[in-house]
Length: 384
Image (cartoon, rainbow, N blue to C red; front, side, top):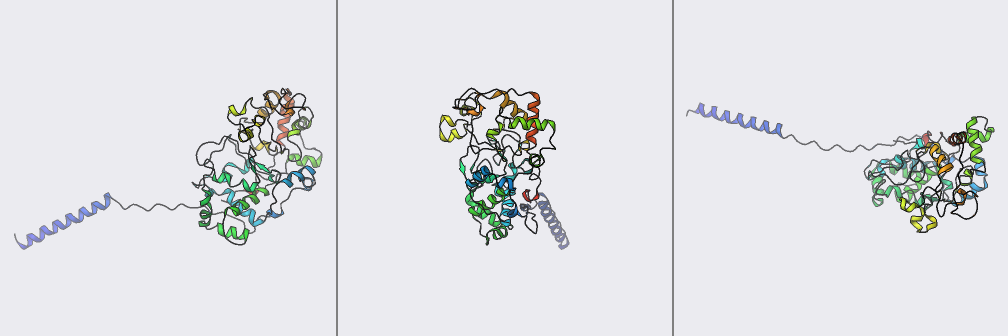
């Protein structure tokens, strides 16, 4: 073999190796690094909203019953920076374990901070058994949840965050998680004087924000001021039905806040426990508490469908029809739902048998209690 032949063979071998190496790179490309999760940043005004200046109108503050109920709740000092922090916390999905659910996911501003489904769905994908109530005028609510199991808003606000079916966050990890997010230390420093983050401060921010949501600017409130001059004939009929002695609507939903601090058994079931939810009875074990649930405010009721603790009624007409015709006997049915309206509980339920005009009027009147100011106010909306 001549020297030139050897050179030619070596050149061919080198080309083959080079081509083989090139094919290898095409067949097995280098994996790309995983994309980093992009965390949304809150868009906040340069000057905070004036939460500390928000207050109920004078007729609320002068009302003896409301003053009494408000005195039962915890004292809360609301600052602009504290409520701003609470607004961010309330709407931030980072407070959930999967970074997908916030408090505002279930408490939706356009629905007076309620939900439009019978049972909200959190991180587990399993709908909750109880309907999500609206959040407003919390100054007058000392005991929280449908079964009133928690006293004080500060003791309530962290529970949904840690609930495995709701936001599923390990509360022991929440402090460090928020500390790692660049926008939280400055917010905590503005609210509390230093950037330290702990559960008490998280709860305080949420409480300040939630206590700022005050609902008193409905068409009904305007009607109080102008003698209901702008009410339709149907709305006036419904107002008369609501406040008329025969229906007793305002005996359970009373005063300017249209509520009661008492829980009632309202005759949805003959046996609530066997139907799936005994309410306070599930906690106390007392037969007299079977089906006893919190009495919610009727303010914004036109925005918060569906209704009852389990969201069984899709609209207000179904609720009106129930109270008119379909209250079920229960051994401890509240006496206000009986023919006499007084005496011992457990009497036979009354049958109002409202006319069509009265039913439609009552529905129309209840819609006048909607406050569309809080449903659009930027101070309560998501900053993300």
